[in-house]
Amino acid sequence: MMVDNIEKLQFLDNYTSTHNIYRIWIGLDDMATESVYMWSDQTQANMSEILTLFIQGEPNNDLGIEDCVEFRRKSKSASGLNDTPCDYYRPFICEHVV
Image 1: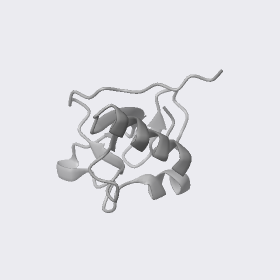
Image 2: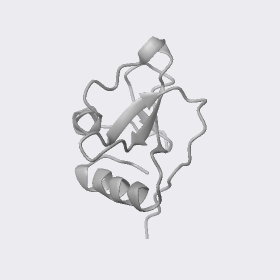
Image 3: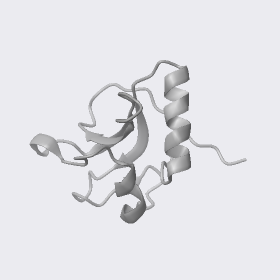
Image 4: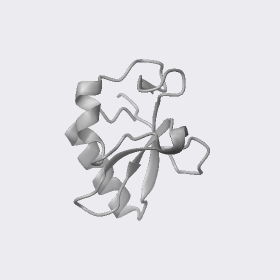
């Protein structure tokens, strides 16, 4: 799911809260080039839009191993995007255009 605006972020916050999910993959990573985020369809993310959706202090590439992006719901004030290692098990969400 391309979480590229506040409306989609709020949708994820509501969805994860309703389904008791705290972390979910959104199909965004910077595996090919550090700090160049690509969606799973290989389109480049607009960083001026995306950076406003990250939790404060993120993305930080902690220990140099955080290349994938998840939505993290911790509390209402801390929900947002977070970079994390790609090998963690997480549920995922897809976006379907109708």
